Structures are given as structure tokens and as C-alpha cells.
Amino acid sequence: METPHPRTHVHAAAALAASAVTLLAFLTASVLPRGEILFVIPAWVTPLAAALGVTAAAAMMFRHHSVTTALTAIALGMLLLAAGGVFFDIAMPINYLFVGEPVPDWPMALTRALALVAAILLFRALVRYRRRALAQCRDCGRNSTTPPVEQRLWLGYAGFLSGLPYPLLKTHWALGGTIGLDHSDLARDGFTRGWLVVPAALVGLVLSLALVHRWGRVWPRWIPGLAGRPTPRGLLLFGGWFGSGLLLTMGLPAAVQMLGIPGAPAPRPIEGMHAWPPMVFYGSWLLWGLVLTPATRFYQLRTRGRCGLCGLGPEPA
Image (cartoon, rainbow, N blue to C red; front, side, top):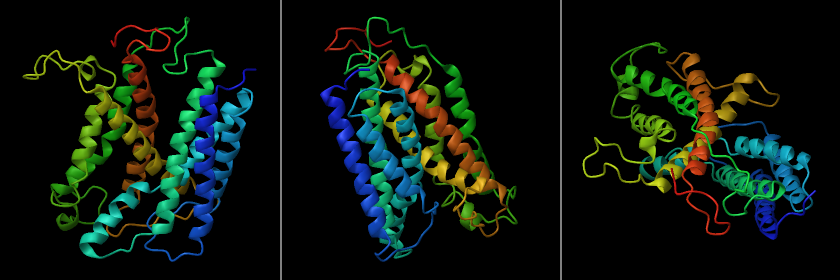
């Protein structure tokens, strides 16, 4: 068993602190005034996630053990679950600023944001931890036996298909369709309001394919002025990681509700809508997040340049 590198200690300590603060924020939220609660997860999720985060981060400060890796993976999933609804925490203050209602649930919004930060820091610590255990370069993750990263086209197509239900159904409603609705409701679901999130979903569909195709690394010939030039790698990585976090934090809590996990409230019905569209939306987002995450990671690995620390690796493919 290997002793972790000092940098692993730094990342693990940051993850430990963020997990501990998440628990503190959750306990404090119970005595503070609350606002409109739109997204509910079982009450035991956040304290358990924070406790697992603290335990996993502390374990990574000691010698490597496979159990620590498994524990950290579980803690990551729980922290993402605890961060469920963070998208609403971004949208509600904007709506409150212009409309004056509903009042955001500030205490739990802070708790969810901290849980997401803890998950990100714990993931970074895990990457460092695994690199040390596998005798890989601490900066790039390579060693002399690292094989080339294969292109996994199926991840892109799986992500594309997983993301289709939402824009298709929302566009159908915007055009006056009633599949999944009790009646046509253009005032709510027309292009002026209910359809506004669809363009972002369409960008995500293109991103899913770009991450696994060559035109995600080099602009194709049919793009005037950019043909043959490298695509903005950082922008694609930001979109991939941001989208993965958003989809997982929306899909995981919804899955808990739909599966009837103990302590999970029943899904709230939406007036005028059948029960199945929300299940399809959230389920597809969860699947999309589960394939977008590795697609983004493999894109990141495939587009790495030569490492300045170890000198390994070719120029980006």
C-alpha cells in the first residue's frame, strides 16, 4: 500500500472541510426561516452524505486501500443526491427578483451548494489518490504503461438519445399538442415560456456528439473561417462537466422519489399534466448525466497534450 502524495492530503482536507460545513449548514437550516420548498429529498440523505464525505476524505489521507476508493464513490453519489435541486436554487432567485415570489429556500440552497462543492472537491481528491496508487503522474495521470484512450462513440449517441425526450415533448406542447397533458395550454407551454429551456437542451445534444467525434476537436470543413482549427477545448470541458453535474443533481433525487426510497416524499402532481412526463424527463436526465460524465472524462483524456511534468503523451489528437 502506498502513502498518499502531499497534494492528495490538500485535496482530501478541502473535501473534508466542505463535507463538514455541509453538515453544519444542514443542521443550521432546521432552525432558520425557510422559503418555498420545490425539491425535497429524504431528511437522512444530507447528513449521511456529509458524514460519508468526511470519512472518505479522512481515509484518503492515509495509506491506499481499495475500500477507500469504494467508500469515496458512494460518498460522491450521496453528495450529488444531497445537492439535488441546485438548478432550482439558481432559477428561483432570478424569478424572485423580477416577480417577488416565491421566496427562495435560502438555508437549503446554501446546503445544496455546499454539498455540490464537497462532491467536486472529493472527486478531485479521488483522482489524485488513484493516480498515486497506480504510480501515475500526479499532473496528467499517465505512466509508461498507459494505453491510448479509445474513442467511445456509443457514449455520445447514448447521451444524444437520452436527451431527446425533453425537447421533443416540449416542442410538441409548444405547437399545441396534448400528449401527456389534459388539455392544450399554450399560455404555459408555448414558445414564449415553457419552451425557453429547450435551446439549452439542444446545445447539450450537440455537445454529447462533439465529445466523441473528431469535429469536437477540430472544426469541420463546412464551418467558414474556422475549418481545420482546434475547437475551444476548455469550453467543451466546461459544458460537459457543468452539464453532467446539473443532470445528475436533477435526476438522482427524482429517481429516489420515483423508486419510493424510505423517507422520500411522493412526487407532487402537476396540474393539467399526466404523471408520466415528469418521470420520463427526470429519468432521461439521469441516464444522460450517467453517460455524459464518462464522455466528458474520455474527451479530457484524449485531448491532453504532452505533460510538462513527466514528458509523456503526444500532442492532442
